[in-house]
Length: 522
Image 1 (cartoon, rainbow, N blue to C red):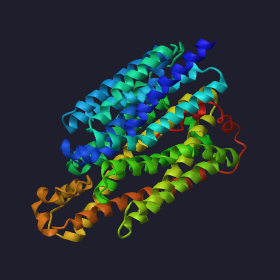
Image 2: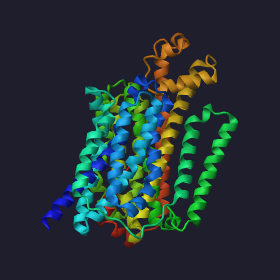
Image 3: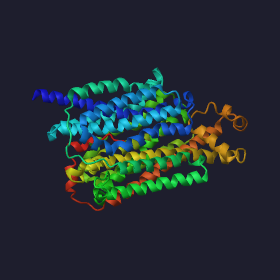
C-alpha cells in the first residue's frame, strides 16, 4: 500500500512537470518577441506565427490524443510526447531563422498539446480514490498555474541573464526530468473499448482554423483571387467539419451537448477568456517595451501582475460558484475582465502613461480571469454525465485554443490598422498604402529605434519619433477597446444563455475531484 502511495506521488510529480512545461511555453515566449524581431530579422507577422503555430498545433491534437492514449497506452503515449516536446524545444533553441523557429514551434505545439492531454488521462487513472484524485488535481492545477502565471517573469529573467535560446532550451532538461518521474511512477493503462480516431474531424477543423488565421494575418498581401480562394477553403473546411461530426459514428465533437444551457454558457466563458486575456498577453510585452521603454526584466515582472491573480482567485471563484451558481459566477468574471481592459484602455491613453496608469487595469483583468477560469472548467465537465466528461473537457479546451489562435491574429490586425490610421492622419499622402502598411508592421514590433534607417523619409517627417510612438499607442488603444467591448458582450451572452436560476444538480457534481483539472487552462 505504501509503495502504491509513493508511486502515485512520483507519477503526480511527472504529470505536474508536464503541465508546467506546457504552460511555460505559452506565457514565457511573449517576453522574448521583441528580441526575436532583432536577432532573427523577424517581422511582425513572423512574431504572430511564432506564437500562433504553437496554439494551432495544440488544437489539432487535443481530441485525437485521448483516443490514441486509450488505445495504445496512456503511459506510452505520454512518454513519446514528452520526448517529442523536449526534442522540439531543442529545435526551437537552435533555430537560425524565424521560418525555422515557426516550424519548430508547430512541432512543439503538437507534442505539448498531446503531453498536456495525457497528463490529465494519466492522473485520472492513477488516482482511483475520489478524495486522492481531488488532491492530485489540485496540485496539478497549482503547478499549471505557476507555469502560466510566472512564465513572463521567468522568460524575462532568462533573457536578462542569458540568451533568448534558453527560454526554449530550458525545457530539454525539464522534459528529461519529467520522463524520469513518468517512467518510475506512472502505471500503464489503456481502454480496450477505445473509439476509433475521427480523422475527418481532425483534418477539416485544422484546415479551417489554419485558413482563417492565415487569412487574417496574410490576407492584405494576397491578391483578390488568392484571398477568395483561402476564404472559400476555410469556410468549406468548417462546413465539412460540421458534416463529418454529424455523420461520424465516433465524432470528436458531440454537438448535442450544446443543448445543455449550463454547458453552453460555460463554453462562452472559455471563449471570452481567450477572446481577450490570453491573446493580449502576446502583445502586452510589446506595449511595455515599445511604448513604455521598459527592459525585459521589468516587463516580465509587470506581466506577473497580469497573470498572478489567476492562481490567487481560484478559491474565491469556486466559493462564488458554490453560492451563486455558474450563471452568476462566470458572467461576473467576464464582466470584471472586460472592465479591466477598459481600464487599461483609459490608462494607456493618459498623458504620461506608465506602469502605474496601467496597473489598475492589469490587476482587474487578472482578477477577472481568476474568477472565470475555474468555474468555467468545472461547469463544462460537471454539467454532463460522467461518461461524457472527457468529451466535454475536450470541447472546452478546443474552443479555448481555437479562439486563442484566431484572436492572436485579430489583435495583430487591429494593432497594425490602428497604427496605419494614425499615420495616415499624420502624414496624409506622404506614403502610399503599401509603404504605410509595411511601416505600420515595423512599428507594431515595438522596436522604434531603427525606424529612420528602415524608412529615410520618416527621418524627415518624424525626426523625434513622436508620431511613430503615438501611432503605436493608438494601435494598442484599438486592441484594448476591442478586447474590452468584446468580452463585455460575451458576458451578457453567457448570462442570457445560462437563463433563469436552476438547482443544477449536475453542476453540483462538478465540485468533485477531477473537475478541478482545468483551473490553469489557457
